[in-house]
Every structure is written in C-alpha cells, then in structure tokens.
Length: 43
Image (cartoon, rainbow, N blue to C red; front, side, top):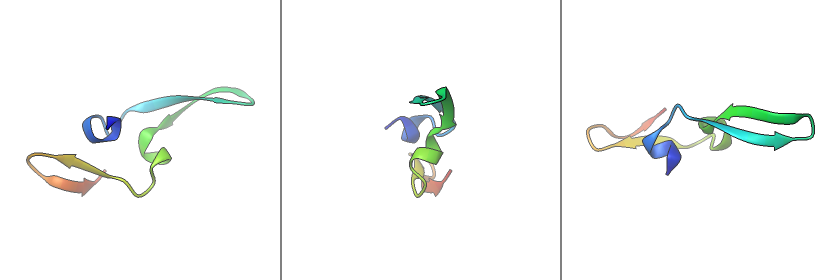
C-alpha cells in the first residue's frame, strides 16, 4: 500500500551493521505503481 501511494518512499531496515535506508521498490522488485489517472505502470 505504501508503494501504491508513495513509490519514491524509503524504508528504514535493521541490519547487522546498523540501520539502512532502502527504496521501497527494492523490496518489491516486480511491483508496479498505480494511479487513478494512469492505472498500473512501472515505477
């Protein structure tokens, strides 16, 4: 749901080396963004 509304959002994840910020698209590699105007499209 975050990806649908904010495709450019970054997510903070805990790692062994400490906190890491990644783009949400990296967590869902085949996801597509959706909007009422354009429908489904690659982010």
